[in-house]
Image 1 (cartoon, rainbow, N blue to C red):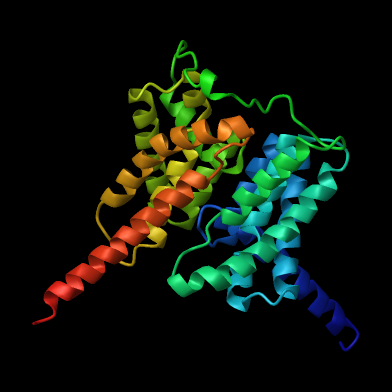
Image 2: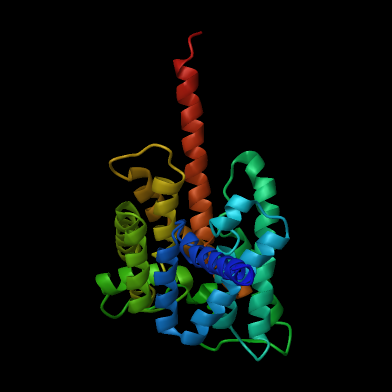
Length: 321
């Protein structure tokens, strides 16, 4: 028994590390559930086994980095230090070519965890959630470097357009169901019906509201993009949907203390991500940068701030003069 005790402790630590790292996958969608994270990882792996392995390694790196950098213990156990690491690793592999991109993906994962710790310490003073800020800025910085060095180069499938090309052709047949499901998969920058379907299943596993709100968010954003004349190619890829999915979950569930019957504010916020995405893409295209999840961050911050302002106003109205 004494000899097996160290092995048991090692197994227990390894199991906990894997469970926390899997939870990081679900935290990309603001959900803390290990089995949901496992479903998401399966979806990524079905799309690309190599990408699935790298995403899991990046999650491990984020978790370990958060622990040894003195991160908050409860945040580490909830996978908070690994979800930005996962996104950074995936974006590095998908956007870049070159033998060194695998090492860079792991480095970016560690950097994302460190950035998460630093930003959490700063933004917590104003009760502002960090969300996916590390992922956005680390990815942007990495892409800008790739344009200026020879060891890395952009994936030819990663097309950068200019403002002159914004009026993209609208020919073709928009497919609502395909665009909606792929839009959920695009949260992880993956164009796959299987990945999108498993992510949706993971959300329902975490709670029926998460799954239902994701469907509502991707539906209203798809319709909004369609009626403002978005190009068919982007519609069918779900490029206008993934920010809406994250935003409606953030605004109507995660950062809403009251249980509401209908996610009205979340729906409005989800719809707003569409024109915000279009505007940001127009601004960032000349730099060769994608909007990524910045529309989600901006719209979520806006509605969270508005809700706090309205709550303070109501409290003042109730206080007798």
